[in-house]
Image (cartoon, rainbow, N blue to C red; front, side):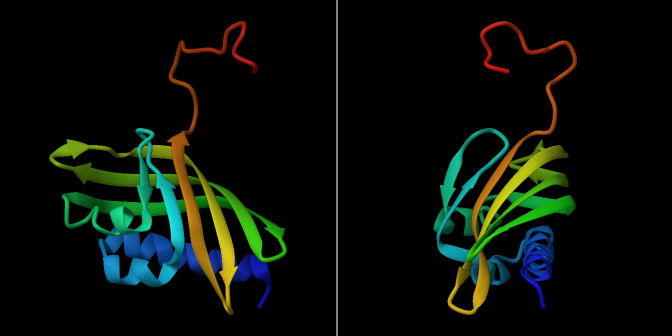
Length: 134
């Protein structure tokens, strides 16, 4: 199996565990030093990421789309789109987001070391202006 197919299989397992709210399945997917950045900019450790479901997070749908895998030896970067139907504490957090992932080889297994979930695009009328660096 190639690195890219191994990484894509890991992403499938991650998305399935997220959609099911299965913290036990996530434990085998996440690296020990995992860090996750959510769409609101919060940063969570591995332990904090694993307790989100117990704290009220519920995913009705969680799909990784259009993944692009770039291999770097024992690491890979993935850029994708995340489409989720999600509620937390009674608030709807559904949407389409840009997803950046860091995957690392841990002994003989690939694990997810980092997740960053951000805006897929700027809101209408929020164009980039002078001095933004873009």
